[in-house]
Image (cartoon, rainbow, N blue to C red; front, top):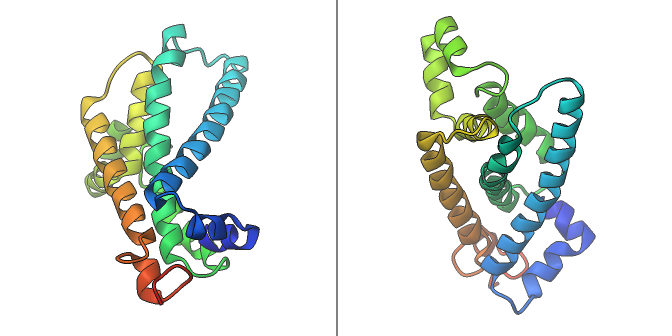
Length: 185
């Protein structure tokens, strides 16, 4: 993300802007979440055409879960963008970070089904923050609150966002140590 942003000029703006980097990172994160919300609701309307019909209240209750999950995953992406140096390395990140997080979650199979198949995989899935984002959204779409998943997603959102803000801090973070633009060298 950092090299993509650097090539398009967005990173240069981030590095020289008079605004605090935390404000800019959070703004970038909120913009990405807003775009993803539009995509999710388009997907939900297509799912409705295939007769997947959650309760009407679920379409409203899922909004906070979507925002929180989007913030968590976006903050993780911002943190990863601070450590990835080259655009070509994103394929490796997709293969060794994102895909395993997706496949070792309850996105494809419910947790009870995974527990029947493999207790070890079940424990791996429970430790995966992506699982809790999926569960939070799944329960909210049907008008329920998964309290454990909510707490875990909030905690990982704060952790990933703090890590991203730290990594982009020129005096303390990862950019400053490598001597990149705005890194204090």
